[in-house]
Image (cartoon, rainbow, N blue to C red):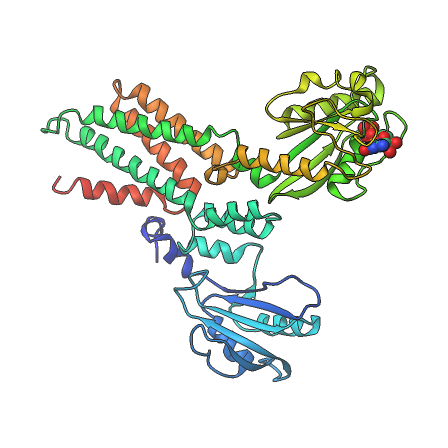
Length: 455
Ligand code: GDP
């Protein structure tokens, strides 16, 4: 019988494999379609192929056409393409089978039902295929999140961001940092373990320099104005201006839809109206706000307050004044000018805009494409190189813990080497939790057992 300690020493993947059931799920969207793909992963994947086709799995990674049947009754279900991927070179690291069937509900239902009857096989939980890929070391946690992001990506920028992350660009950086941390820990451990030995002079100084450099890199990575997270979540563009300058009409013209209420009456947009759109591959949520005017009381006052709050946190503000009433409408927004704002003169079909201010007309469509280009240019400039930024708050939180632990190390190191070592360990644990790639304790065991050879 195994004691708890034995379990702990066993590599995680082995511990997990001994209890693994085989999972299956419809990999394509539910509903009627030309083709549906059903994926099976686990030790009994080969058995599911045998049960459903009456034959052994086909040659690895080669599509073959076979008749599918219910293993219990022998009843025909479909003619389907079968793909067989033997472990370990598969997406989950386990044996994987794919059934490409005709996408009718009865066919899909029949296959799923037949699969569920195979011993040791059960329906997959949400995300379980990716989860197994992580547990089997195929991808790390950051890459697994990228799989979810790639599936959710609406625009090309979001797709690029997720793909970079899935291909390990972030993980490579984080793994490099962890390696440097482990080296620093090993050096420090030498000082602790061999206090009386002849160790290279300046070992502690070298370590402090290395840790400080690492901390600076982590902080620089974090100091990006949350650009990665904002790119992933979508940017917000807020339209600000006095009442009746044509804000709602502009939003409609930009979005090409009737998402906002267009009305000649002042103060109809009391809350914010939002549409999402794709501008040069950036996912943008365009927000129309209550017109800024000087009666901020009651419901409308609340609308104006919300407009200003949204503008403060927006990635870009479109400041709209009315070309035909410039003197009256421009002063309302003049104070909001800044590097994250674009000024436009609306209703340019009624009057000439002031010099240097791009005019546009929601009515004739003039200047709308130019505004979209200007927005695209702004985003491209502001988001250049943001692909490597942390894409989630979870990453940011873990990296902050790393940087803070490294800062504590710097402060402590002269005073107490043992406490300093603990801070390095905390930093390594935070990084380990971020990628989830390695059980940090296992890693440390290996490193220190190697380091202390002969002790
Ligand atoms: P908001 O209060 O700033 O959101 O303004 P609206 O979009 O509701 O428009 C106010 C009024 O101006 C409506 O009567 C619109 O038809 C009109 N309007 C909006 N844009 C234009 C434009 O480009 N040209 C002209 N001539 N009228 C416009």
